[in-house]
Length: 339
Image 1 (cartoon, rainbow, N blue to C red):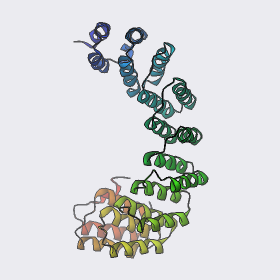
Image 2 (image 1 turned 180 degrees about the horizontal axis):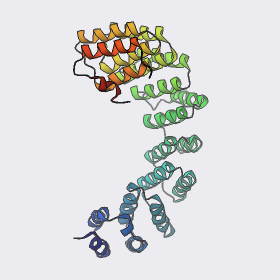
Image 3 (image 1 turned 180 degrees about the vertical axis):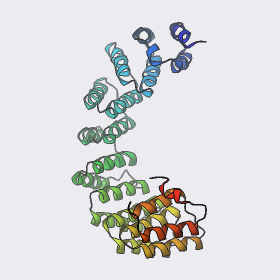
Image 4 (image 1 turned 60 degrees about the horizontal axis):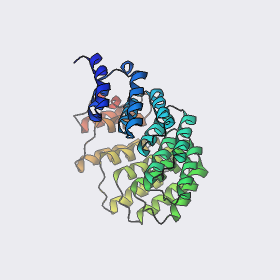
């Protein structure tokens, strides 16, 4: 059946309340074929049946196609008719509006949800906080975060991470510390490695090395499982700020604890050394990888090359040549594979 015929088929499917087939047909239509008349049919069906399923399918389809203006128009039609829209759809719409930097529209949708009489669930609050933090709107993110607490909900790990990342994007040290202080007294949250990684990155972003190392020392004496991403993060921060003595201490302590280093953690430590002018120790580290049967991939090779900077030098040339000799599956092209 031609796409034009699909658009003609939808009104009959709506009358039959065959919503699954309507959704299937909608995905085959071009955006031009989703006409105002078709949207009116959808709204009329929802108002008549009291079932928002079809309307929500259409709004979700429009959002997935980045047709946010049309999605908002349909949303407003529904709310005008007092249709109770599901909370996941509110979250999707707020995320889409925030993603387009339409903060006013996102705020309006949130307050419409509050006025709808629904009991807002904790996962809804979390999704809305995410929407704001993803675009760096920490004023509204904190407002929703605080309202969540006032309503008797406790933030989960995901929401704490979202707030920490949002403040880090803004280089907001007081915001990061405020969330960290809340976290310390929150008996409902069990910090995991992802939460600690977010904190390490956030304090690294604002250059607070005292807090970075305090957190790292806390991780070492906690029950947190230390994994590769955590170790990469501490090496990256040490390299960025020239804290090589601390990086070396981390390396030694983890070796003593029989931590299983992988290619990426080796690379992160090598990059830290190279960035600070210690290519010879980094070269020795590279050679030691073969002894523990580790391989380098293009991503790691590219990171090593980038650590030397863009300008060529004999030191860089010698190092990269040694990489190829030790890992013959790599080529000179590998060093630019992920540039």
